[in-house]
Amino acid sequence: MSDGFRDAFGRDPEGVWAAPGRVNVIGEFTDYNDGFVLPIALPHVTRAAIARRDDGRLRVVSAQLGPGGGTATLAEATVAGLEPEAATGWAAYVFGVAWALREAGRPVGGADVHIDSNVPIGAGLSSSAALECSVALGLRDLFSLRMSRERLALLAQRAENDFVGVPCGIMDQTASLRCRAGRALLLDTRSLATRQVPFDLAREGLVLLVLDTRVQHNLGTSAYAERRWACEEAARVLGVRALRDVEAGEMRGALARIDDPVIARRARHVITENARVLEVVRLLDAGRPREVGPVLSAGHESLRDDFEVSAPELDTAVGAARSAGALGARMVGGGFGGSAIALVDAGRAAAVEAAVRAAFAERGFGSPRVFVAVPSGMARRLA
Ligand code: GLA
Image 1: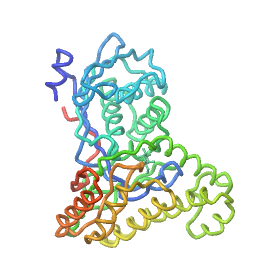
Image 2: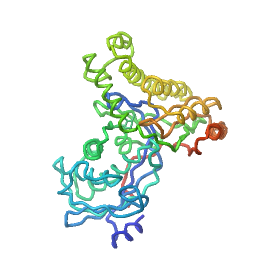
Image 3: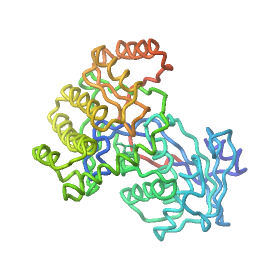
Image 4: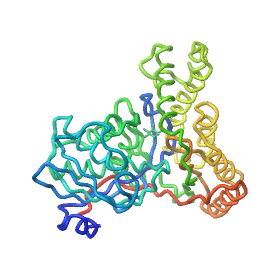
């Protein structure tokens, strides 16, 4: 890691920070409706090696990708000159963090930044939040900014919303900065209150498999913004601040007041999904993780039929996993590709993986990436 920094910049970094990707156990598209989410951090991390510069310039290099996605080259800007949407590709996330700090009245000086990541990109596992959070934590420490992790997550989200131009919620950045090993993080996205929920699946003889389809359909960003708009429209029609304010028990009456059937379905997903998060937390608290399975599967059906953000590859992965004996399975993240998860008895994991691979081969899909999601720790300084 430091070698990459030395090769790029001809000196040593002052420090190295790592921030994890995440999978969300349950609570999809609830984060921009003021609702609940329940992510875990992955062992996969993005590392940022950083050293300050005294000329106000930011220079960034990635071991994996050039700034626009090609081979490794350097992207450069001045902190003072950063403007939203001026940069493209992964470097925009780095510049966006410096910009968000500057806009928040916490300006940072220049820096050399070397990025190295093993978080799969485009897999719905929050490689972008991992990138933002590794850089945000590093800049905070090096420039001695006194800011809480809660505040840093909001700044990283602002970078993505207003600099990169992706209208994401607060889940991914909070997961990267605040998850603990062996726990799932219950986050109330309205108050930003968190609670660490026991998630020791190994003790129960269970595993959570990640089934990365390795496809990402292009609709992604525009459909994400369109769904977000539909949710805001539903809240407006219902006269509530956000869909979080509609209880599951009042859902029928509420949905009957929404004329547009598509918007009503979007709202139904959010209202039922919020209830599913609380149900999963109740089961985990009660030491009954096996029973989480059917709740995950119900979440998938809701994402597929009501929110309409699934994809053939995701439905195939979920269907094959369930047929092979998974206790439950669902797509995760922003949808239209990326990954699914399956809750599986440890002894069935190999059979479930084989069934998913066979189903993909049969449909002519590319080979999926399958791994066990071990709930891991939050972003941290490594050196
Ligand atoms: C993406 C966004 C998150 C969240 C999920 C869906 O990962 O970045 O904020 O909205 O989609 O739950």
